[in-house]
Amino acid sequence: MPNKQRSNVRKSAGVDARTRQTTTALAHALIQLIQESGRFADITVRQILQRSGIGRTTFYAHFRSKEDVLHSTYEGIFGVHKEQLRQDTSAKPRLFPVSEFLEHLAGAKPVLVAFRKAGLADDMRSQFVGYAADIIECRIRDLKLSTTVQPRLAARMLAAALIESLDWWFDHESISAAEIDTAFHLLARTVIASNTHVRGRVE
Image (cartoon, rainbow, N blue to C red; front, side):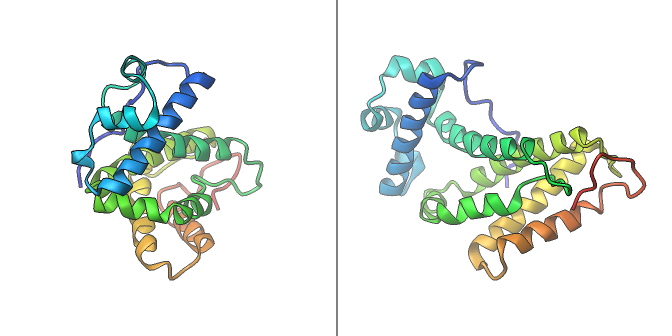
């Protein structure tokens, strides 16, 4: 599996309503093409533009390539889950909304199957680890947790374990999303110092 950082896909810093519309249209077009063609490598930017109705100038104002469009879909998914954690007022704070993420993936299973068939499995897994690690690291810092290793390394290790378990769950689904959530946070305790003073203990 390639060990690369998640991509910075958008050229512009701000994301307004028009930009979101453009990004959504391009993402939907690309997903449809992946499901139809079966090979990501065969899809061209021109096909994406034709399917989405977005002009070339607009496309290159926001993205550099079809890979950027692909990664922006991942960015959007993890952005939603990051916001879920920000709004979480639970007495037992989590490092990552595992059960919600699993339920989202379960609902998108036909798309994920198409992505795998299109040769995107390794890239998707690598990107997922990067985004999940960012969220986990932010939570470690926000909750003022003390880790037994450096926070960035701890987040990366936990994210890799999480995505591997989700990949396994995707193929088996022998246990519930809630059980995966509980198991992940039990694992997280092994890298969270037990004697640290925190605002909320990870459950």
